[in-house]
Length: 374
Image 1 (cartoon, one colour):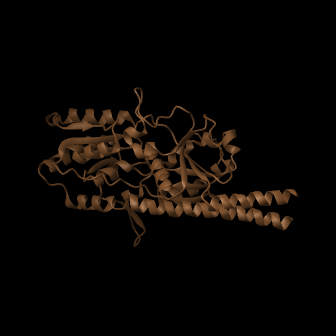
Image 2: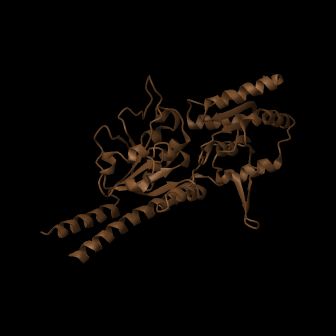
Image 3: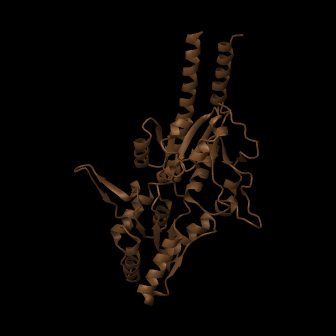
């Protein structure tokens, strides 16, 4: 049998496997050892929804020491995301149990450019995709002058059209696909009155100390107000506590989407936040009449953390007087409705379905070339 005939049969079998859903989506994921992370939670959401759609989707770790379930040393995925997410399929590269075939899909976050260039990853003949949630992280480990396409990653999934445009500036030939983030339904207002508690969420711990210490130094009369970082708790418990807060503070300069402010809005907890380097699309209003962009009034947005303590004191007075601006609450409500599980499910079905079909088309094109050569 000729080599062309052998290749032709292999390609036909490959197409049949994909059409029969006999393939796997492998999502390379950092193990947080039980520490909550918005970007990791979103990856787990993709994996769960793909399994719900009838696909095979697996969380893939580099090392074999990942924690699905809590033990005496670490919390696990069950501790903060829940048992349904801990029970999703998990594998590690180190275990040697992974067997990636050309029919499979490998999805790697943008921060792991060093993983993309590893020999064992380069040797995978599967479809390779980047998942970009914080585009600024792509520069950390990307070798100078190299592009994702150099490593065989020709598609990227991201969370907004604005991020897709930003990625296109750096990787002109890459195919972009947008799947927005969703906020679970259990993020909702508390049925009881709000408490004098401020939820604070900062990527850099120094910002937490700077804001809280500055506030208490400037306004010692408000020492009865409490700042809380909601760490080491399940997402439902975190949502419950966030719903009790009268205010939240957010500082994350390299955020791509920013789930915490939307979670706060879902809980009817107003946000004071520092504008990230890349302004999220939910923070902007585009005026097509004069081609201008303004900040949305769905939160109190500042350019510097220095201004935040004074704004907290101002908002605290409004809250105590029951005078929270109605237009603020209205804009928060409109924004929070945009990011729901139903819409994300539909988008995941569409985007990953298109990727599967395009993979079949790619193989068919190769098959056509072989037939022509024969």
